[in-house]
Amino acid sequence: MAGLAHKDVLRADQFSKDEVALIMKLAGEYEAALLQGKRLNVMEGKILSTLFYEPSTRTRLSFEAAMLRLGGTVVSVAEAKSSSASKGESLHDTIKTVEGYADVIVLRHPQIGSAEEAAKATDKPVVNAGDGAGQHPTQSLLDFYTIQKEKGTVEDQTIVLAGDLKNGRTAHSLALLLASYHVKFIFVAPKALQMPREIIDRLKAARIDVQETEDLADGLRTGDVLYMTRIQKERFEDPAEYERLKDSFVLTRKHLDQAKEGLTVMHPLPRVNEIAEEMDDYSGAAYFRQAANGVPVRMALLALVTGRA
Ligand code: NCD
Image (cartoon, rainbow, N blue to C red; front, side, top):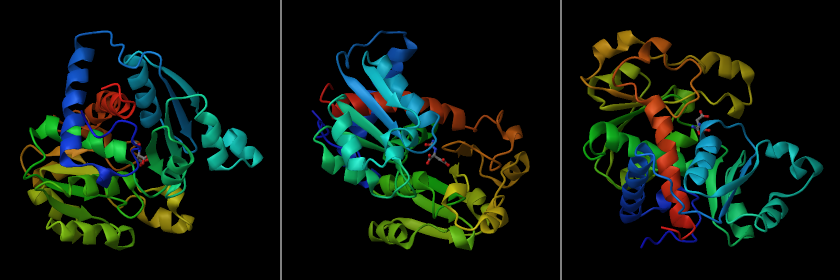
């Protein structure tokens, strides 16, 4: 039995390696069950509430699909901004209300630390589906699952994270999740969008080999996995600065000539201009497979935090 029952999922660095292994194993079992067309009733009688104060396609839909695939039900506020928050209700009061309706709450909110704040307001499990430029722990779990599936293991992989590493919560969470494993990182970002020092320091304390560069070619030469990220427009105060940086890296077929054989390309999506469409039929382009992996991984998480697995 995992130590995850009735726990919140707030940060990628909260998980022990045993917990990650358990989530991966259960996700693998659920994926196999889905492929066999089995009907599951693990979450029968349970209700998930999804509260999204920022746009989402994959995260919200894959959480909801996960709950439905497990035989549970969903009550959802797609546009949480147009809920009572628009009347001035605090996050605390919204969560106190929703806990009366649901067994588990998935929250996306623009403020760093909002998931922690929500978790304090309720004993029901709260899952952080993105807190501003903070973290996105469930994305990092599906990224982990994807790397394992594509590469066989995360161990000894050179992972290149490229793009907006300052504001990209998926990059923050993936780096922190992988800090307990034997990986090497190459961080590719323009000067203004580098990985926060605090995260670099944590990786160095964990004796992870970290290289920082502004040149994508440095990452391509030795990278096993290239994880592209979107420049996070919504986090910029100055629109001119966004315009200057928005096309910092655009991956095309040409780049593959410089890359290590068998490069796996990932992206949490949505992509804007970071990966040319011509890349989509490259066999190592894993980003749509990655998005699909969100369902079994979130099935595993939901079953574990509600104590049903
Ligand atoms: C990401 C997010 O919301 O942080 N999307 C996702 O959840 N798959 C990445 C992004 O918006 O750039």
